[in-house]
Image (cartoon, rainbow, N blue to C red; front, top):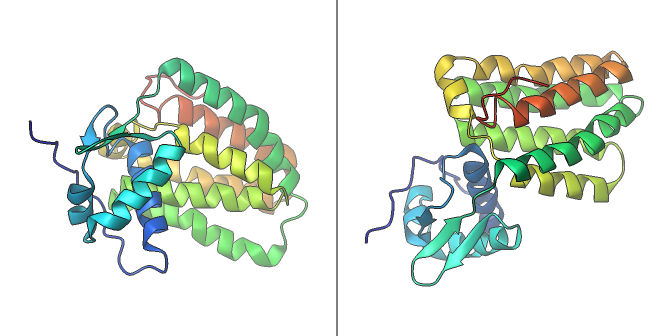
Length: 227
């Protein structure tokens, strides 16, 4: 039986750490649904898509095995793990406990001089949406939120949230993209920064809560609206 074809994924170019870049790109492709749950993908096929040899792809995939995102199949490749609706509900519930109050905490400590860089990170999400690049969208979203949470000064919190976000699935991004709503959703990140820059901790916390509701609802493809 032939293995499934690999979807169009963005090239990763020349990077300082090739393994990390491949790992991040594949993780984003899994979260966005570009790499489908339950499907086995081979390292040579993914390597050809990225324009690299299979070796760094295998190394990156082994990192994702540790994260629980893929399962190795000897002599075949790596199967993307499936996540149940119940698991997604549990993930969202934990994120709602952690992220909104953490963002509220950052409002008072982010230096004014850092906002231009944060705005650029937010715009990276919008730009990816406008390009129709779902993998780039997920990657940029990941970087933005973890950078924002980094201002708590708590690396353990950032690590936990990173793991929770990696296990999330956003299979509803494709319909949002086709309907033209993904760009509007991406703009929420600028709205969140508006509250943070205005030093409005309550608004920032509520906006983060709304954002996570979208992740579990419309963006997950579950047919639910925001909570």
